[in-house]
Structures are given as C-alpha cells and as structure tokens.
Length: 234
Image (cartoon, rainbow, N blue to C red; front, side):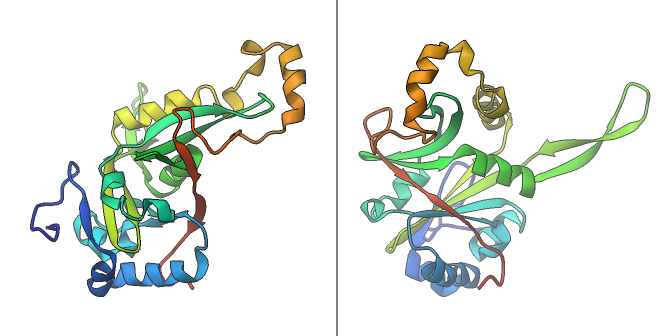
C-alpha cells in the first residue's frame, strides 16, 4: 500500500505529492521519464504514458492505468498540489469559422486555466484502458463488449513539487465525455445553430478555436502540447 510522505494513505479521494527531486531519487521510473522530458519536452506539455512507467503508481495501481504527466508552465510552478486537488472541467468551444466544435478539459489554479483537448484523453483511454468482456445476448450467444473500468492518473510536475491525482473512470465521467461529444466532431450540425449568412461571415476567421489567451471565464488559457512516452524511450 502506498503512502504520502506524511504517511497519509493514498486513495482515490486524496492526492500524492512529494518534492520532485526526492521523488526522482527513490522512483527510478519517474527519474527515467523526467530525464527523457528534460531532453524532449520544451513547452508545457501532457506526456501520455501508463502507471507501470512510474513506480509510485505501479505499486499502488498496477502497470496499465492510463497516466497523463503534465509539465506545467512556469507561472504554475507553485500550484502542483492545487491542480491535483481540482477535478477538471469539461467544456465545448466553437471554431472561429463556426463550422466545427471541440471539447476541452481544464484545471483552474488562480487566474489560470490549464487546457488539454478532451479527445486526447478520450482516445488515450480507449486505446489503453478498454477491454472486452463476454456478454450474453438474447439468443444465448456470448458477444464481446467494450467496458471501461478503474482510474486515470494525472501527475502535475513542477521543478519543486509533483502531485498526482486519480480520477475514477466511473459512469459519471464517461457520461460527461459522451454528452460533450454529442455536439462535436461528426455530430456537429452548424446549420442548426447558425444561418448560412453567419457561416459565410465567419469563414474568413479560419478554423482555429481560441480567439484570445483569455478563457470563457476570464482566466488566462494555458494550452498543453502532447507527447507519448514508453518504457525505455530515448
């Protein structure tokens, strides 16, 4: 069983946090990832990996839990624990030309919103953490069904401190993703929201989503790049 440095038990309701240098000293997996990130991660980024790559998670959750390691911007260097204690918001944003919509996750800390495209997380979950169970059909035959279970981990890394958040992949979170997805991608129907005149007027704006650095709630939006990491990556 894994404990925080203050000997409090790590559960799905609490967060793990430790000094980043101290964590690298006793967690060989985190040290390897941190060394790799020092070479290849140049901007605030989300690194997609699995719990097996970090000893701190592997011993507690096993090796297969989807894990997103977030290297935060400098302005959030003192907010690792605050970020890990905040469940992300899920929201939709229209593109400038009004012809598409995207879904995003964001963690708020002070006047900042740390933003990650939801499709990155959703696709990552589908790739890493779905499995097939036999389900009996009405005719008695067994058919495989894709089922989500368990958790996804978000590790917020700053030069001074690293904090880890576990989110349960329960029906509520999956439902939030599904509801957001009902009005984006192939389900987006711009003619139901905008007239052809409005679409024509907006066409010159291009397809980008964010019009300014400020979010819908007035916070400064901090967008994350995305990388993938595997054991032994160099």
